[in-house]
Length: 68
Image (cartoon, rainbow, N blue to C red):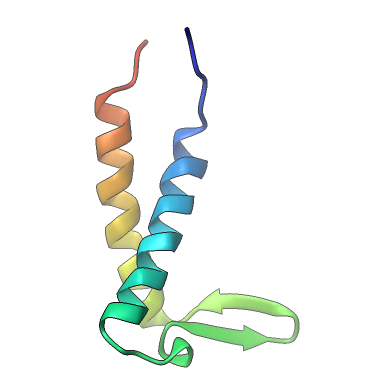
């Protein structure tokens, strides 16, 4: 059985979940990770740094198992 996934999307979703778990485990306020400008929610610079680290981690794991 072949399952096709979008590596970028999966790594992004996993990284986003990891950022949320990081917030909860470190007892941080969400405002230290997220900023709201109008109706758009974005990461703060600190939040983006954490996201990028987790993204790279997950992307590399997923990519290691990629079948060409």
